[in-house]
Length: 377
Image 1 (cartoon, rainbow, N blue to C red):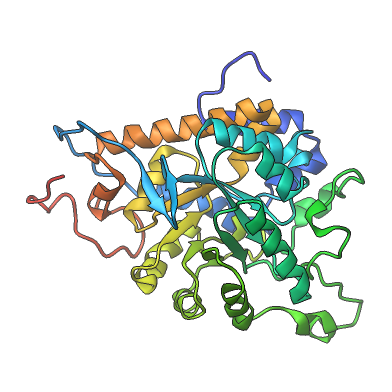
Image 2 (image 1 turned 180 degrees about the horizontal axis):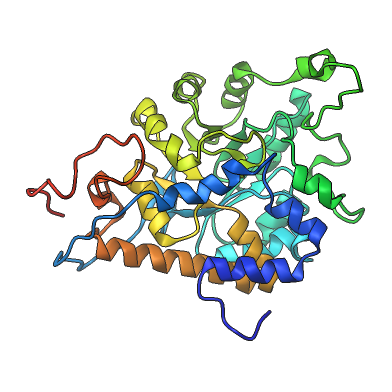
């Protein structure tokens, strides 16, 4: 790592690019097609302004919350990211060590390069398991049972990656998964049909694998076959939020898969308010574009209960192993707490739309902090 200590998440991104091969960097960092959504995920946060509040009583402040029975010290989770050994030889176990040091909840990917049991044996902080539904229900059920037996606290079903996106940057770089890295949790089984081949002159709709893609009945089946709370990750449309609740989901995660699947969809933060409204009392989390503590504050102000951090975790992992991941989490948490204090929020329950400036963010329907003279934290 550089002799200069990174001071923000962007510094870790620079360091990670320096130590990773161009091929691996393209896989971990790039988005789909023209990468418009990937860029917009971060840019949309900059369009939202904060309204500072001064001379507020901060005595006894904290960032603790309870989420699906898991007690969190702060509302920042580590998002599921596949094949972490691409970034560091110790992969997910290094990340779990950092999560434990920072008392953070880590969400483990089905496509992790370390077994979910080995990760659980390493971690002392809570773990959730991200599930890619398998073609055969028996294979999905086996993963669910393994997660339950290993002590995972929740299931996160990703629904927005039925097909791979057109990852042109990755294609141009010629990325191929190295032989020594694999989805070890799948025990040699074929991956879900994310990348359906289309022969020249044929239509994607002629591929028989398309008929085996999952639907809402599969979510209902999972809910009926686990004792864990089930979250649906990849929700952007309010209609899907309502359908997720009907299927028995305990919560949902607004996400566009980091802009890696379908380009030109809204940034996660742009989709958040409508999903929160549709979800009612069902908890909503946000994934995508978080790079500053002020981003965390903005997401919570728009109704998210917590956020997930993906690429910056991998940047920290690549740059300095578990210490890098821990430092990334420390930086973001500290920035978030500073933003809370400067906006007059003593706890996460104090954070609402009143901390946002009226002109900040498209299509927001909220009380203006500039006109709400009676507002007091």
